[in-house]
Amino acid sequence: MKDAAQLHQKKVLVLGLAKSGFTAARLLHKIGAFVTVNDSKPFEENPDAQELLNLGVTVICGRHPEDLLDEGFELLVKNPGIPYSNPIIQSAQEKGIPIWTEVELAYLISEAPFIGITGSNGKTTTTTLLFHMLHQDEKKPLIAGNIGTVASGVAEHAEPENVIVTELSSFQLKGTELFRPHIAIVTNLYEAHLDYHGSLEDYEMSKMKLTQNQTADDYFIYNADQPHLAAYAQKCKAKLIPFTLKGKTEDSISADDEFIYWQGKELIERSKVLLGGQHNLENILAASAAALLWGGTEETIIRVLTSFTGVKHRSQFVTNWKGRNFYNDSKATNALATKSALEAFPGNIVLLAGGLERNHSLEELRPYMNRVKALVTFGETSDRFERFANECGVAAVEKVTDMSTAVETAVNHSAEGDTILLSPACASWDQYDNFEIRGDAFIDAVRKVTEEQ
Image 1: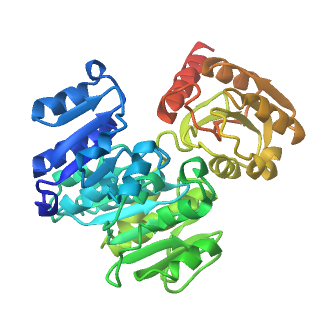
Image 2: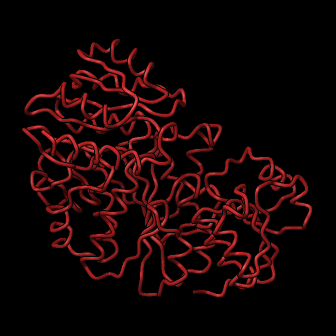
Image 3: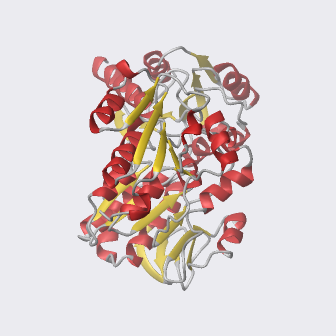
């Protein structure tokens, strides 16, 4: 771990704990900063705060004092989920206090270089694919970031021969200043998280911070089929590596209906790739390009692409039962992600959808609703989904209150050859703490139904 001498004896406020805040506070204390932690959870219910207090960190729990920033803090490290509309964050901005997420800390202490992956959709699949490719080529990758392992905690133990393959959200990237990955990937850019960012411009600029510090020695892999993303790419200083699904290119990575190509040469037949769907093809091109740029072999990439079946909760195949295929796409927390899932299947879909009401448009789904033979909807958006499905002419629409009933209802509306797909197009927080718990509830319900009948 690098020394990060610029943080020695610096007075730092860590706002919000959870995994990222706890790790950042512990590391800052270890580096030699004067750390204060402020978290809303009461101290007696907060084991992370208790452990930090035992280390010698100042802890303020159960409230956010109005005069908190009067303590002369020189840096604020915040949990990525805390919005910039938060009064403490706004006050810090007014006082000119730098506001980081722990990703910036990870970069400052890491002995290993980074590959950074972001995008509106496909981040996790691309990150996981790339990790497998590099791991099988013995490139000593580590995996970190929004995928579930805190980047600064991974960086703490990284060695120079490692590479940290890092999934990054717009929330994390907005709080970076010097962060510079050697390879940056943007899978795509669609309208998302406007409740957090306030505008599409702020959302996109937060994503593009991934490449702002890159130089001509670095690489930027991006989706050339999106004109607005291609326009952003032209402002970057890194070597540009575009990917496209619109046919063979001679100098980058591309695909047509039959093959994936690397620099104009056939890499693999698409029919041999197990991971289905146009959206996953984008992820495959991005991951393959990064692996090849890092010195991976074509043989290993082919081996991974002919064996990788998907990431849990992301168009994850669960089981086949009486000719019905069950897929768990609980990570689809917006309409664009569900559109991609519907696009991956030709028809005869029984769709399970619904969740937290954010008043986002469902119109992206309309061109694909003719593939949906029945909709089972739940959560805060169930009434709106019911109206939308009726407008689209879906033959059967049913509202339910829980996942077990949803799966039972879906099975009752299905026939041999159908796809039963959980792809909610909404966040989970109205009924579940996160999309993983929602997806696990679906898997458990599927197993119950298929084992009992």
